[in-house]
Image (cartoon, rainbow, N blue to C red; front, side, top):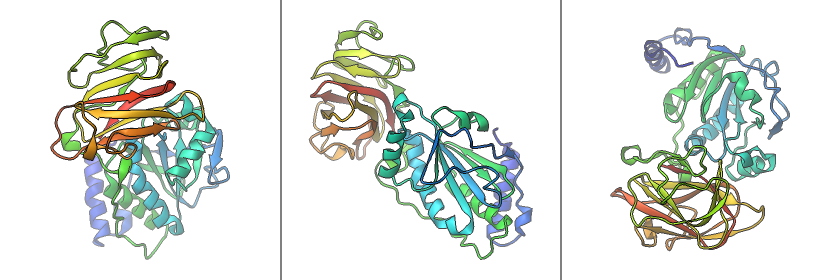
Length: 351
């Protein structure tokens, strides 16, 4: 579904002219990419009664696929939240389709809690069986689909970025639907915490998973003992983007679980931010942790989920921001030690 580059450039040129008031809105035409699929495959709805494609006719609809531990989605949230609020009285309906990546994200209570914590107030289609994902033939988190008042998909955006253009598409479709006197000033966003944009110029560490199904660059001596308990050791130093375990762990396909207290994960990375998707294996339990960066407490480099001495607590299954370091950004060795057993670690992400 990638858009032709020449078509994209022509639209940008026309849209820029449109919002300078130099041409009629009809001149900034967007291609029809398909029809809004049925939403009946959703396993539930949050913040709204069930919505249907037929019932949304006459509205401009923005559909975003998300999963609540995805850092790429989190960094778009401030914009989508702002668009939903700004344009709701002009006829825009924003729908978040929550399609899970990890097993625990299939739990509707987890999705409900995450939506509340993250202030996702617009309608959410809970897509735990991937039915809506397949109906759109979607392949990405996050993915935006822009639907006109006739129920036609007119544009899409995969991944982060292009926020100004995305908002201009919303404005263009609302204008096309007959909305006049639209406030065409673009939203101004000052995102904080995990929602803040990545430091792309210094980002040299890609996402990596901790379960054996998708991990790379595991560096503990000897091969991982899959789905069985084993005591691992971590090398003193790691090559960039390599990781290791220390202590008694069970390496599973989706996650790796600590069997006793004092286990560590060590990771060599190059990025401003380091996040870890993790949670307690027993619901309702709390697991203490302590961070080190190059062997020292993080101090000013701590993230929102740890203090300056590196201390923190895991209480639920979600993404934890552990490191946000100041300049200069160089290769660092990160270490997290869990003071209690029962942690399940899923994925490292960076920003």
